[in-house]
Image (tube, rainbow, N blue to C red; front, top):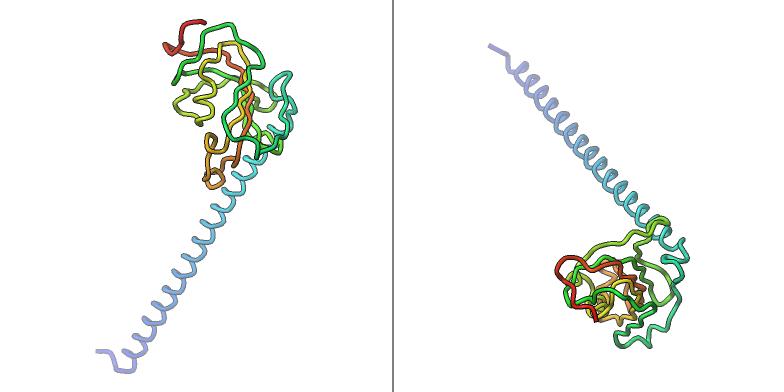
Length: 192
């Protein structure tokens, strides 16, 4: 049987080992948390760099579509949707809700291009449904003919709306140049 003194020493040794173990676990948890935060910060920084590179590439192309360029405009004067056919198409006519293939670029009132089908100098048409785009597109492209080029002047409420900045979208009125390559599937109206 152990003496009371040896029992007390044993209890102190066990307590000391437990305390050191607890402190060690605490420091390991802190280090792991710091590593997780560092990885998340690096990922956010990498993402921000990629987004900035994409924006620079889009801005670097002064003519995102041959013969057309962004230009600044008076935002206060844009109160309603305006369409202007720059090239009259000769093909089928876009119906409401159609699926289309188009080349395009869009810019803000200060003339800054924020979106384009021209990626790094290569223009490649995108396919999308008019039911899944901003209202200025879904209404502004109806009646356009394949092969045509249309300029859209879109008021803020038909663009990305009042929560645009919170959703990482450009705020205010926008302008687009859209070159209609084709109308997809059974969504074409009769040629007029």
